[in-house]
Length: 259
Image 1: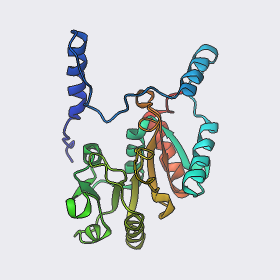
Image 2 (image 1 turned 30 degrees about the vertical axis):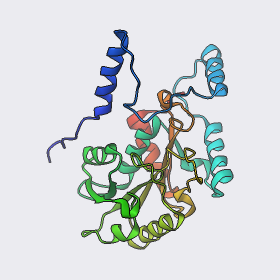
Image 3 (image 1 turned 90 degrees about the vertical axis):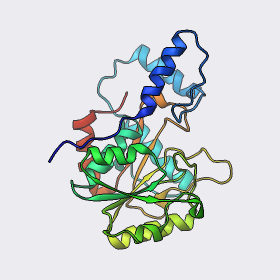
């Protein structure tokens, strides 16, 4: 088996060029990444200053933060998530790697929407997992449907759903999320839900896939809604039976998240 070739993440190269031009005195409006222009919350910055001044930290994972994230799911989505099922990660990207590597073996395939976030397919390919892209047009508001997934032949081993989605911004309706969840449950397909853009909606709040599929893997982070992209702090919610496998991968591949 050869090492898979994947496309570069072009936004990183564009960002390097933009910062180079900026250092030369050029006026630059940064649109290369999907990231906030606002700073991190004042309380988070103050807490970080206090920790840096008083605590050497070291390799460490906050149990209090996991408990607070669990409380967030209870408050906002009315779902119960045990803190042990929440694995703190080095941003959502590491959470995606954990989700894929804990769920699939080389040769299996995963379905996802096109247009969609390019790192989904590149990360899958880097881990020797096949990609089944589903063209999504205006008739479905550029979002996945259970019918489109059901029509795939061969059937995928898993599905990645994003709502709100990158780059379209599409928020899937609750009925669509429920239909996808039921289809994955019926066919034994692993369901991964990318929810990093939750909170960034103008009409109605986005629904978590955990409301419809308690065994789904959920990727999230502090980068977008909390304007903390450079802090590299995210999390992955996993089913109880996958906690040990995902935690082992986190420890070996990334150690703990940023303290």
